[in-house]
View 1: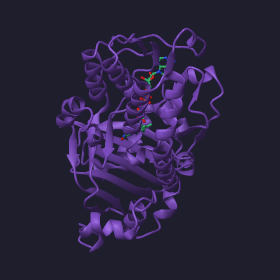
View 2: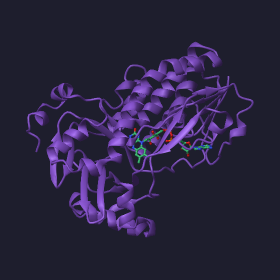
View 3: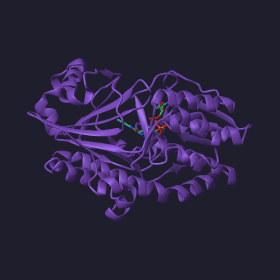
View 4: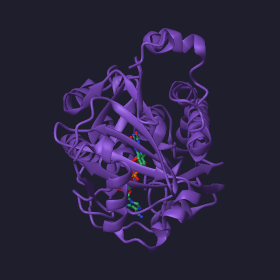
Length: 367
Ligand SMILES: Cc1cc2nc3c(=O)[nH]c(=O)nc-3n(C[C@H](O)[C@H](O)[C@H](O)COP(=O)(O)OP(=O)(O)OC[C@H]3O[C@@H](n4cnc5c(N)ncnc54)[C@H](O)[C@@H]3O)c2cc1C
């Protein structure tokens, strides 16, 4: 089988590893536009049981990554300077670059040799039995056919920073100043570094004058807004430009010999910490289908198996993304009510379930 995988992010690397491991004779090209150590962002979080989904079928990858992760069991919501701890909402985190390096090593162990610094175009898909578009939210390969793609940006603006401040739990800090409303998602992703996603609504962004500020002025502004949370530590930038989160959806998951996986198939708002896991689970499901069926049927089987899970998660991600798009409104609530609104935002946790997961929070023992 001749396979082209476009993009060596989490989806493309893991797909290549699994496919080559299961079919050593498969002729697989993994092509990445960037050099091996170039990436955006700082850390990524994994919600709930982190990489437990790998334990059954791929304990080797689980063992390679899990010891490198920061883990914690509670989440903190800070509003009007008051921290409210929600117990039992666990997350794990790892630096994105470290994660990609580990995945590159896993792929190399199966004999995958990625071709870096080469960009695939949509007209290169001929001549392969299978082309996997794992080239992210702005996928080029999607241009090879009509996948019924829609890209809908959320209205909030965000910029992705790091900091040397170590936070005890994943923390959501909300702040109001003379220009409007700000939020930071912050968590440590290594023993030395934390991730700090700085976010505000569109009206605040205009009033603060960010369109006229360069990167260092923006960083200084963010440091000022979040000075109490940063406790004297600086923010660190890495291509930390303002972005709007794109909600990518495709009505068709495959066309001819091309199949979409990961963010090329659909994005899930980062506030639910599931995009990377979804990308890896796509890879698992696609390789399983390819091991059981010839290509055309495998692509249909992949979609049939995966669509219900993905639809459920994207619905939760959409609800969460929409809650963030209206967070200034929610900030009218007092800190504890605000924390309740926050934790119920994706529609996945009702009061009965929350009582089981977070008894201390529900009983009011939250700081
Ligand atoms: C601010 C922010 C925070 C996030 N936080 C989290 C988080 O905490 N937890 C989480 O799980 N997820 C998070 N995500 C989402 C997560 O980053 C993605 O879901 C995940 O990276 C998807 O993996 P992927 O391999 O599909 O795509 P990507 O990671 O985007 O990888 C695609 C790769 O394809 C390459 N590429 C693109 N076009 C071409 C081409 N034409 N030819 C060759 N190569 C190409 C790119 O260079 C890239 O390396 C966050 C996203 C954002 C924006």
